[in-house]
Image (cartoon, rainbow, N blue to C red):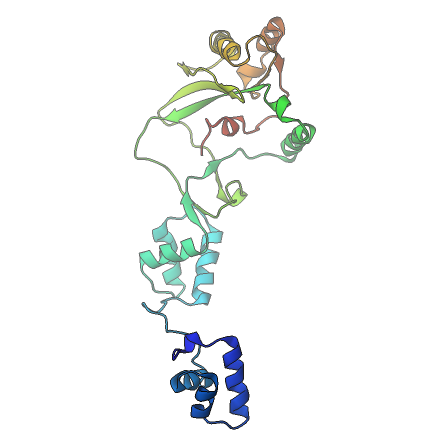
Length: 277
């Protein structure tokens, strides 16, 4: 019972009261049944428990706030650049310390999300489309067969730029990166729905209306039959030139397939899982 950390809030209050009444530390310790050293430490203001072990923190709160501003200014900097600017601001630390402080802020180094830059009209169309479908039931969405083409980079060891961001900041404008053209890659078409995934089609060359209709004929229709059987479904694709061509529209009409209204530059590839993560 002799440790200060063992004192309860009631005991500490009694110690303060008895001290004000002029009692000695020995009398107080006998009254509340604890060691005299515990009473002494409490009265001297050292009753916060054992001292923390380990090295003393080498940066101040002010210095940490400075690092936070550096990260906010440009989230695509390397750790070395962050530390260099932090050092130039007057905070001399190691690379490991800079990394720990950034992580303490909740930031992690991620591959940036690639998103198109939209004007006001495009954003409004996307908002209108989303508003129209916000009350769709699960049964309605389960009828949608989502599709997309996407290029996969075949170069290894080159992950490109990284971004410092917190959880939930994936699509924050400061954390987005414009797409880079044109790395060595392979293009793949795929489709998925609530019923499962369709077949993959590896595409050679450019996709035009004619080649896209061949993909629909030989890959989309068999996938739809596997996933939906004889039931009706809604097909989703974006507004790429091959998708929005008049001949492609006629192909869907001839086959009696309903196409989901999809605004320009909507992230269908991200929804499908084929886009950049």
